[in-house]
Length: 218
Ligand code: C5P
Image (cartoon, rainbow, N blue to C red; front, side, top):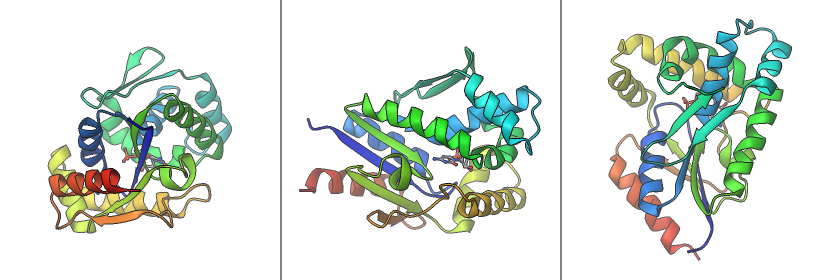
């Protein structure tokens, strides 16, 4: 089997995580959720009591904190300084703060370097995020930009989190705006990305289409 890197980018609720995990299983590849890395660092920032408007304080946390990332698509997991944070990084506090932390240029530098190192040491890997095809792995074998209508994305997110629909839709819109307009590495479609809209397509159809694209590419 050849080395193979798949980059999956898109906004929150586009189905990125489910699609990326299933594709990784099908390819017998590793799975890297870069959003979980930004969330874990955000959890550490909140734990340290650092102000979200203090980029130097945030940068210091980024240097000091040790992330352990498990890339098995059956059991993806992340810990910070030995503490498993899989549950708290999905909570409201982290979700509300993550866009601010991920806008700090030094944070992106540190996490991008770590992501590239993980990709480098993997034979096959599916990497999901916001800037994978554009910045982290511009040489990926397949770049996918996954979208869905904002109503559908909010519906999926509130089903996942059992949260209030209107509040979820507002939070998604706020994060999409922050993530797309930040100065450093905003959410962007790579020029050579395959764009798939998952509003109408089922998850299985998206996974099958990506598998087909990968196995038929020259
Ligand atoms: O994908 P997820 O919703 O878990 O990502 C959480 C946040 O992490 C995003 O809203 C974004 O601010 C940040 N992120 C990023 N770059 C990535 C992945 C995530 O800035 N590659």
